[in-house]
Image 1 (cartoon, rainbow, N blue to C red):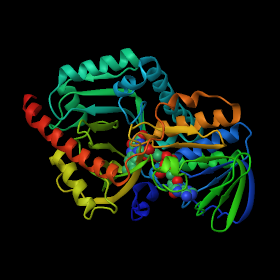
Image 2: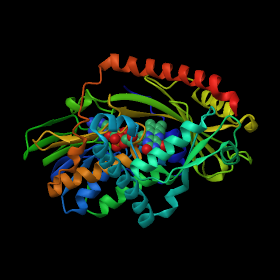
Image 3: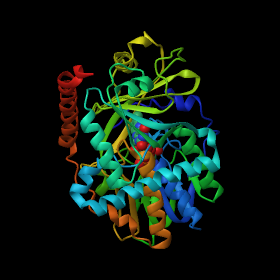
Image 4: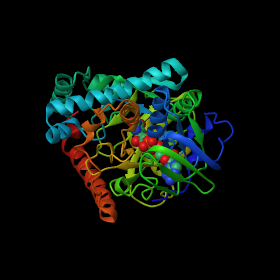
Length: 429
Ligand SMILES: Cc1cc2nc3c(=O)[nH]c(=O)nc-3n(C[C@H](O)[C@H](O)[C@H](O)COP(=O)(O)OP(=O)(O)OC[C@H]3O[C@@H](n4cnc5c(N)ncnc54)[C@H](O)[C@@H]3O)c2cc1C
């Protein structure tokens, strides 16, 4: 699946400083590990390996964080794209609790790297998850259960408190997660790349990997103009290349999603600087960013190109939640591709032949790519086997074109259910 390149239209590109491109791979390089893909999964793996004294070459097809990592919503929170009740149903509660703790380590990693590297990357605290229909009993119980089983501090907010913070009469009750925060994802990824280089990682841009061959400890990775010889390989290409490592390529479905950023707004409707999302299943998520702009994300599709009139569509959603905003100008609008496995969990593993992978982070990839990078670095450098906790979520075939149709049909089904819930319960508030 190939999206037309909208990266230059992102607000993040307009407000980050990339500097000149890094070199393209030419000729031959030797390394202990060659990481393929310069998103946050690849970058974190490379940084953590280098911190353990491993010699790393990282090859990125375009620019660092060109994919989802440099154009996402910037929400950082614990957990996974899959809900913990489903994870526990599959692997049992103790294993689910251990996985959840790993996801928390990912959040902590980002918090620490930002604090030590550049605190201005952090843009706001906490996450408000709002219901679009009245459901106090269920919402309160879900928060209490999450806290009891997974040790969180998620707070329940009633309708008045929710509306005081979020500012929309569309919303009813909410939960507030103080452990979450939001940030500038491109500046964060560039900072991680800079730290990796400072630890000796050789980063190459515009160096798409065309093939890999050989077995450990003698892998050869080829680009158009060069090659890397390495003892081990790490594949971190998400859904952006499904051929380079066929086993995980077949297991990852590309799913597109969208973000728009308004002009600076003079408004006093949204009163919180926290991240906000709503209960629509493929729902809206938004946050106030610099200069009082509103960053708005939502919608998923499996189409092969960006929908026309994307900005208009996002504005319609925005104004349906906040009619007070009138007719804000949209200054930036873009699409991004996520990678999803059928089980909605990250796919992290190895074939025992020196090939490793960390992919399928879905729409919950900030903390989980950090977690995946740490797990793989510990596995490769120190033979730690905690990554095996993800073994129950292996690279199953995602269904090819049928899988894609399934995602689209699933999205339409979710939209219909959302509409039904809102009609059925919405008037109660
Ligand atoms: C619009 C949007 C909003 C999102 N919002 C959030 C959010 O708020 N919070 C959250 O937690 N998650 C969010 N996500 C999900 C999150 O961004 C991703 O899960 C995460 O960034 C995936 O990281 P990655 O490194 O696996 O993949 P990517 O960031 O996609 O990186 C893969 C890289 O591999 C490179 N590549 C591909 N093929 C090759 C090759 N052959 N050779 C060399 N390099 C190659 C690509 O160019 C790319 O740079 C969002 C995603 C999108 C698209």
